[in-house]
Image 1 (cartoon, rainbow, N blue to C red):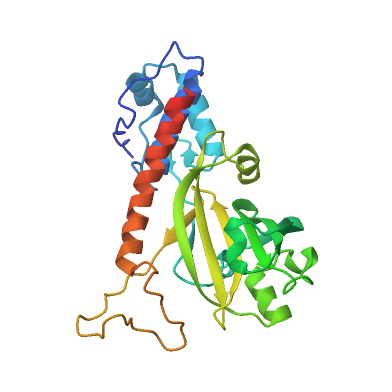
Image 2: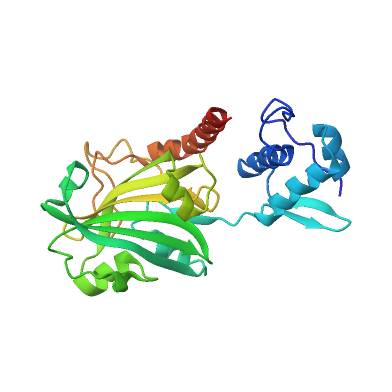
Length: 303
């Protein structure tokens, strides 16, 4: 299969005078285009000889770069058939639903694992004041899918409501499921925000990401069946393995009474302050652009 022309996303050739080895520069150049879908899954890469000419490097440099991409699972290499971009190992999260990441991914057949990193009692602060208790239960977890780290989750719960919650309750388990089974609490509504943020050293280590990698942060507050706030959370997602999906619905008819929104059977009323579906869709579309811009800024600042 003939190789595909590679768009020159960086706009500059490899820098032979840089302290960064050429094979890492080439790997980073190709990797960025795979991750931003300039080179979508199934795309045939140019041959080793073509890459040599395109970037003005030796065959050993090209082979080292392609070998590193293959080790990451980003490309597939085969004798006599060149290299192609590998299928993405993505897990999709419906952020407009109250079901958590664990339940959604487990529903696709993936093997979901949860490691409790810490469970402590802390004084409430401005970010957890909505829970209405002077102290909160602070929970930190690492979530994996098929053995690959995909999210680091920090959750704050009101005490003494959940004082009996134990770390062993949450090993390889869904927090929402445990809250329902052990405390009779059902998560029925909430508010969510999505943004691209830099990852600190500990976070990047847990997610097995390179230095200066941006991550996808989902923050929110969840409410129970009686409308009481029961959790505040921040979840940092691996940007290569988790995709946020949003279902879009038509806006209410202009004939609907002022201030009212349609409510599906069995669902909770939507607060007028909550983002409309179109606004959420617009945020999701901007998120990808923001993430790529942020990654480029980090790369430039570290060069």
